[in-house]
Image 1 (tube, one colour):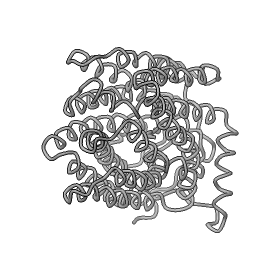
Image 2 (cartoon, rainbow, N blue to C red):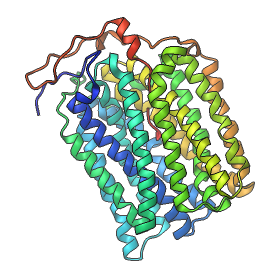
Image 3 (cartoon, rainbow, N blue to C red):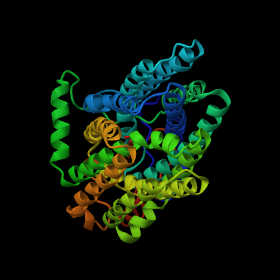
Image 4 (tube, helix red, strand yellow):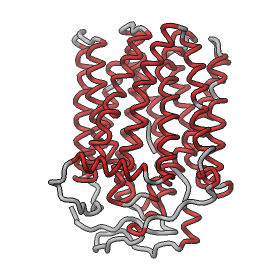
Amino acid sequence: MPSCIEPLAAAGTSLWRHRDFRRYLTGQAASVTGSSITQMALPVLAVLHLDASTAQVAWLAFLGQLPPALLALHAGALADRHSKRRQMIAGDLVSATVLATVPVAAALDTLTLAQLMIVAVVQGAASVLHDAAAISLLPSLVDRSLIQRSNSRVGALFAVAATAGSHLGAALTALLGPARALLGDVASYLISAVCTARIQTSEPARVRPETRRLRGEIAEGLRYVRGDDRLWTLTLVNATTSFALGLLNTLWALYLLRALAMSATAFGVVLGFGALGAAAGALTAPALARRYGPGSMMLAALAITPVTQLPLLLASPGLAWQITLGVALFVQLACAGAAGTTQRSIRQIVTTAGMQARMQAVSTWLTSGARPVAALLAGALGTWVGVRPALTAGAFLLLIPLVVLARSPIRALRQMPDPPADSLSTPPADQTSPPAVPSPTRTDDARHERALGGNAS
């Protein structure tokens, strides 16, 4: 691979003309599409075909979310120490391999909930390695002044991919069954690996010796995030939001499929329609943040999110409520897309190049650590007091991130922050680089900032 290809730095050049950005986007979008197939098919497989109980559904969610809580900090330190692309490819190949065992076992009539739980753990671990590297790779592909615009495009395309994946998952589940539908996700991991392998932009030089203890680098990342009020506040907002949504999402599929008697096809359509909201939120985030300020925009999004849970709590079986739930999910994910692209952009802009993966890993560690606890709490509440009261508790928990952001100075942020000094220069380009354009001025920067980071994660 060429050793020095310049990150895209252009105020007027389209991001779609940048080859490596397209490769990155294609691979990650394929992965999102496949993950949406699994999100659609796996609950159907566990609930309707393996007759999983509420507690078993909660345990399946818990085990799938446990690896990020345990491994995120290590994955981030490894991504800052070694090649991010190689780490992404390794994660993709492991995920494809372990997920392929599910349709094989189903064909042999040996599939059990125990196997699904093992698959969830292994795939979760592989996804942590991939995601820690993937999110932190983006700032090395584009100039810092274009991070928000890039994240806006990424968020929108990922939402469209999620929509396509949900509809494709519903179709594959209906035609092939939920187990064989997972082969679509297997294929998506392979596509992601191929696209990542074709990225040629050089990664930032790793200045720390590889003999340094990993524990020391992890501790450095924790201190870095804790020492920056902006990073720490946004990380806490992510973690508290993740806890509330972890509780809600653990029981969401079970509630819709059983209590509301929603068919697998209708379930996939609702998920797909909601994903359109995420695309709308990501695309409009730069304009909204430019007009109202990123702080006010994120605060409004967090305030609207708990309200979107009301239709879920009031719903009963029937087409009218299915449409209402789709609209509510559209609004919820629009808020998530707008706030998510903005907060991720802020964190990527203010973080130095050598700390990108560890900064993201700290956020992933806290948000992922909240999810398994929330999954267990959801299982306990769903068993003891019922699914609907448990969902009500999750809706109230969504008020916590609103309070965290409202009590921080970020609420008054009127424009995106300046990048650190070490990110203002870009490496020289060789003959294979895309056409170079002068970096935008600070006035131009203000036009291109405001968008985004991840769930799951």
